[in-house]
Length: 38
Image 1 (tube, one colour):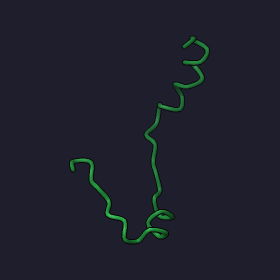
Image 2 (cartoon, helix red, strand yellow; image 1 turned 135 degrees about the vertical axis):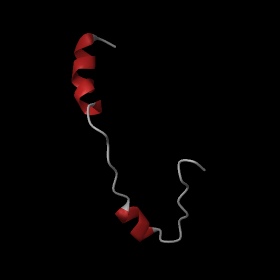
Image 3 (cartoon, helix red, strand yellow; image 1 turned 180 degrees about the vertical axis):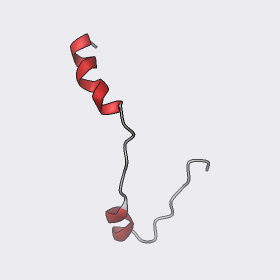
Image 4 (cartoon, helix red, strand yellow; image 1 turned 90 degrees about the vertical axis):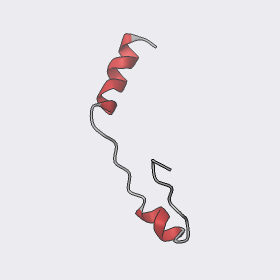
């Protein structure tokens, strides 16, 4: 892992990632979602 690689990757982790699971939920309506705590 070089400094150059780190400088390219760090901006990706500056903000939270958000995920939209709408397509998955529509495709698999009976899928039971497990919460983080579970």
